[in-house]
Image 1 (cartoon, rainbow, N blue to C red):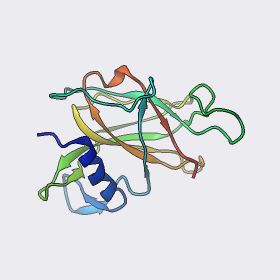
Image 2: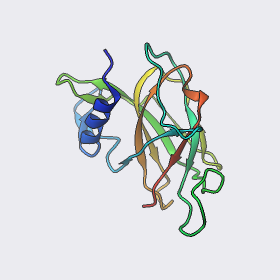
Image 3: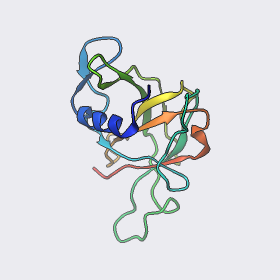
Length: 165
């Protein structure tokens, strides 16, 4: 039985900056620590929503950007700065013995190119926490989001906006 996404998000928010236990061993610092909760959007400007039913392997893609400088006009995909060198990682969400959720071992990672674009490699279908960690001196704060990966995840590219640090 799949956990409702809102309940899952509430659980993840609670553990975002605390220790979590991975699938292989003792409690350690969460990969979400130090990152803020974000919200992925697809190319139509809508929150990303998965299909219902069994999730098959898939991949996702998108663009990581920063907000426009104050006073430079609207914050649009056409005018916002792209952020190169952002590390994108996905961690499967797994149930633990207390009924909550925890992160499994990293399923994969990629890095944004000079235009801030990324294509994540194909991973098993399911629910994931995805982190976006910018280069240390970039002036941007990293974020994390949740998503469900499935066969059509790539159909609507994400745009991810990192806040200034």
